[in-house]
Picture 1 (spheres, rainbow, N blue to C red):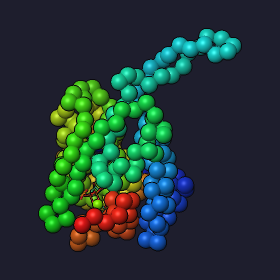
Picture 2 (cartoon, helix red, strand yellow; picture 1 turned 60 degrees about the vertical axis):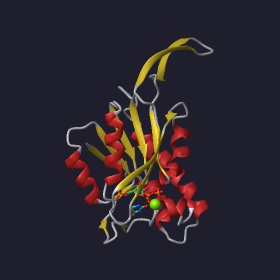
Picture 3 (cartoon, rainbow, N blue to C red; picture 1 turned 120 degrees about the vertical axis):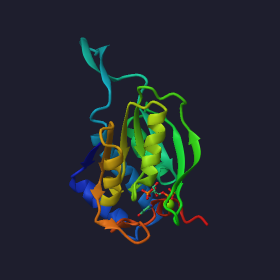
Picture 4 (tube, protein in one colour; picture 1 turned 30 degrees about the vertical axis):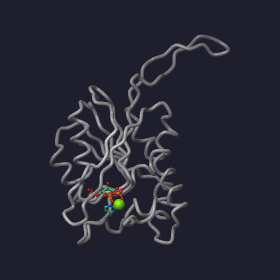
Length: 211
Ligand SMILES: O=P(O)(O)OC[C@H]1O[C@H](OP(=O)(O)OP(=O)(O)O)[C@H](O)[C@@H]1O
Ligand SMILES: O=c1cc[nH]c(=O)[nH]1
Ligand SMILES: [Mg+2]
């Protein structure tokens, strides 16, 4: 497993505004999309391509095309949905599948409540979107699920991670073809397993508090 923290002043600036508790939901949604587009630029460096032949108005030439089937993008509901538009803006031909997962805030266990993905992911390149990697439980389950369907390599785009969650994933996914792309590795988890300094509950800040 590889971890890549995108070190760029615009990423740092947008993340700072996102963290601010005074930032409203509409601005939070917009910034999330912008951040994902910046992270996705780095996260797609190894996207599979092939040589294609085209004709410009001047001459025939060779260029670059995305290999088919194109990458599968999987936002983890709810919060990952706020990242989808930013990703598909960069890779408009990507296929999109969905995983609905929620962390039980008492047991911290990740529950999968919805799934809409191709049955067979053999050989596919998959990009998972979830802004928060806290204990790592949600991402671990999502990654296990995608490998079990045959995914070849998985790149997770997250905004924030806690060192504890990253260490858990490193241990469990040692040697697997997984890359985690992040805007920041924060300080720690608090007693409720929220990321510190973090940005709060990403799903609630995007879409409001559900009962
Ligand atoms: O690393 P973990 O400890 O598993 O926590 C991270 C998960 O928690 C959040 O989702 P949440 O369960 O709050 O669902 P939501 O997106 O519907 O708010 C977040 O978007 C991750 O999916
Ligand atoms: O800090 C955290 C931890 C889990 N889920 C969130 O949305 N935020
Ligand atoms: Mg939430």
